[in-house]
Image (cartoon, rainbow, N blue to C red; front, side, top):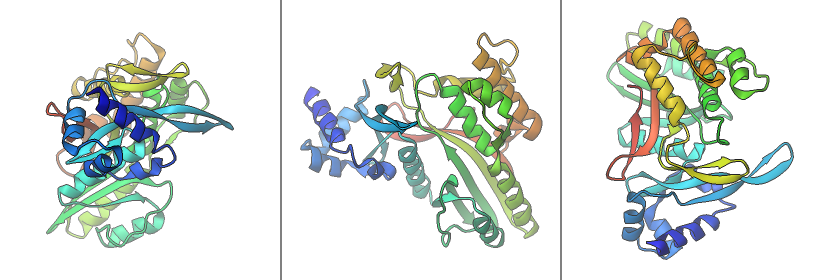
Amino acid sequence: MNDVRDALHSWLANQDERLDRFRRPISLSEVADESGVSQARLATFLRAGGEPVYHSWKHTHAGKSSRSKPYSLRLNGPGTVGLDWEHSVVGAAEAAFQRQGYETCRELGTDEHLEHLLVSPALGNLVPGSNQRDLWALRRVGSQIDLWIIEAKGKEAYGFDHYCFAETLGQLFEVSGEWLTALLGAQKGDGHGLCWRIARRLHQAWSQQGLAPTITLAVLVPHWAPDVVWDNGRPRTVPEGYYSRPVAACRQYLRTGDSAAVAGRHKYQRAFGAILEELDEKVGLRALARATAGLRFRLLGAQCHERGEFQLTDLTE
């Protein structure tokens, strides 16, 4: 299968100026046509797992450019592929919700969007904004409303996994800047927690209209393993997924209440645990993770199950 690997490396390199193409799942048939490898062989190779096929995309920070974004090619739906780039993971999740009968929209969350939703629980006529909440998915059956508001995070440099995960939690719920600063090592303000305020307002308004709303706030992260990360100026393959450590810590806290806020060996473990405890005190995070109706919290992972097929997985429990 080395010839398939080489062909996919070349195909990814040819997409170097087309990263936005991966905002939506790309069919294997398109990849087959463009790479010269049959669709069946591509599917077999990608389902087998093993060391990821990746390309390092250009990134500019503080005026300096480097190829510091090693995004890997992944199966992300029935007969489709994408990257473990944030926007591509959102695209895969959106397609997964659509297959379950949800209407979806990205980049919602302005006052205008909210006013529309307060009156009519539907996404169809809304125009996406800019830099709003990453993904909304809504399904209505009679008076039953099922709404998901999702904040996603892609891979950053190795070692920033706990900070990036906590930053995403801070988009759902208010998180103290003290702990974000401790995780990043640089001054950060409080997490805005807009999603929680939006969810509470919608839930109250829809309930007063005689509807039965379930509103889920969710963190979405790539959760494929093995993974390729940017570490000390170069890409490196690691056996676990980029977010494996904060995902494991969050799941443990939700299950047991053990946060490592006091007993953690490392400063980042204590700071991350303090965030989890703070959110439990402020919003009842553990109860939200157990809730089956009303207001809920969920942790979603984009990954492949044992047969190599894509799955949007509930990692909460």
